[in-house]
Length: 209
Image (cartoon, rainbow, N blue to C red):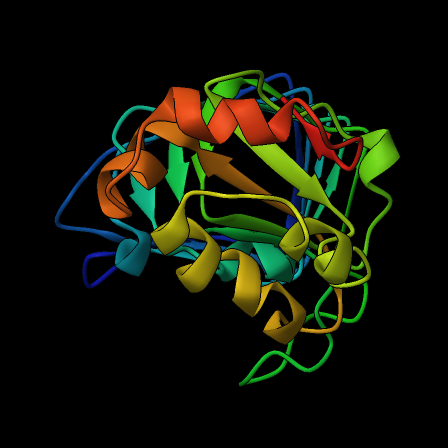
């Protein structure tokens, strides 16, 4: 449904379809009461124009054609067996009951594949990270970063990365079960090199890379 520039897809089940969310002048609303199975969803809009609420995606593929930045709306979705391709930064996935403004109580993420995605500053909430496939180096993913914060802080990280990222791991929201970063972006941000980060990462068993 297209209403005053808002494209609303709700109250239906769709299967084996291709959805292209690429109109930069539109706001896309996915849900409530939306189920997509085996669909391809092409995203080429800013995060502010993509709103997800009570939507369920099963075995879908998301093709992110422009970097999706700071998109917390995934926590309004249930993602099962989905695959993500493209660049995502500052995005949150999974179940986060205390998220400001409320979150869908059935939101979840499981059995999803991010190996063809580039993730930076992406968090996975209230889930089992063992069911997820994370991207390989130069991405790297902290597993259970809050519980392992002390162990991670004991390693000899590059100074600014240690000060700005590692020391703050314990302050992440309680549901945080994994945190994925992109080494080249982190190195540029904190005046170091991907190689210097990897030298530390290789010594720790709570990081996937």
